[in-house]
Image 1 (tube, rainbow, N blue to C red):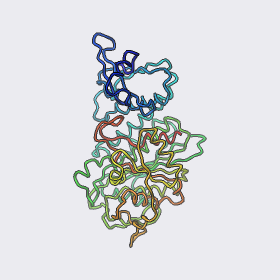
Image 2 (cartoon, rainbow, N blue to C red):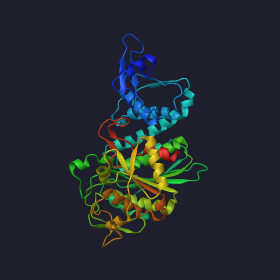
Image 3 (tube, helix red, strand yellow):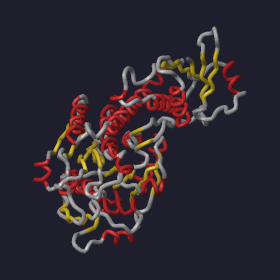
Image 4 (spheres, helix red, strand yellow):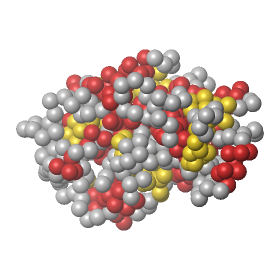
Length: 446
């Protein structure tokens, strides 16, 4: 099968009903000729996004047992080839534990200057591989994916990459070091919580970016138990941790000259006699206290510990947290857009630019100081689960309480909605999307 083609195919496409739209596919049957089938795929404006859509559409139009040969016109921009390759790899994804045989079709690029696209193709490969990993981790059933399993996956992946180090804090160490929020969230489960820290320290790096990702491997809601429908997709509640870990591994593969520390607090929020209760007061890592009247507002408790630790112990130049934090994210912005919070205009703009280039949507929302009063508690330093509205905003404001003097170098991405897709759509496959990996890699590699 051939995608692209010559003057004959271009003329045939001109007469089709939807010529040129990014991702539009025209299939031409050519009996008794070679190739016997040609796909003509629209690239829209011809930018990277258009080529990414074309790549995704082309690979979806090919049966698994057919090879795809892609003919590139002369002079295509390297960024376009990167988009094409990313679209193909991402749309071809299949969950590794559900696949028998190859996970992708065979694709060959035909061009007069393949060497000129080598770097674009390698960057696309690393980006897609990292996104596949985040999708695999998120799609894995919670019957397998407990905190210890997740930590083991990270250790194994990092071991294959020179220059990466991994530290896993077990329950005893978490207790000794005062990670009260993480211990509370994971206290009701038969599988104890842990904290995974991955460090990438390339020689000569002058900038330190700390990435924090929510890693609740399954969220029942705890004693404030979710409904059946509200619980059925909660294996995805570690999507933030999957994204920041995969992005760090990808950065190491690309040799990004930035020091990166990835922190993934891992816990299962379960219902049992040892689960934390509504009304409990929890002592966080920084020694402050939090009143919690809703055990289903658990992600902010473990993130708070780790953000405070990162600021105090790691001295980050930039601090970014990524979390499937609130259902209010989807209420405000729908199923495809993350909420971005930051006081740093430059950092926010850089993340928005990276997201647009990568094909991941976000929208910046405010951090109004007059909503801080919602966090008032009569019995603790703050309240984690107020019910006065603006749920995603208030959750971000809660996290801000633990940033200390780094509020001007911090960004929070609430990506609960875009972490999952209910259908195949463009470069997304049904299930986990790996949202955030592509954006972070673009940002780190800029």
